[in-house]
Image: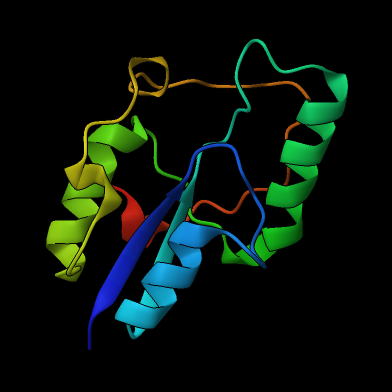
Length: 115
């Protein structure tokens, strides 16, 4: 079984996201990675949308503590993913870990993903 990894860095459009369309065509299963924080420069409406989108995923979320740029290659290796988007270097603005405490969504911490 091939597992693809998709890193959603700001766009939660699940219906027409080009990367998701390609990944679902090329993989049997997907692991979708999303950053917990919308970023320091996000306004109130963007923050609410971001955390609402994460909250809608509810029990399907697993929390990783480090930067996605660091964790995605490890996940790809663990899951033997065919094409991890992290193979391309992320833009510098998202290469660092960002935490957001404003309007925290309900996030489930899953011990299977802990180191």
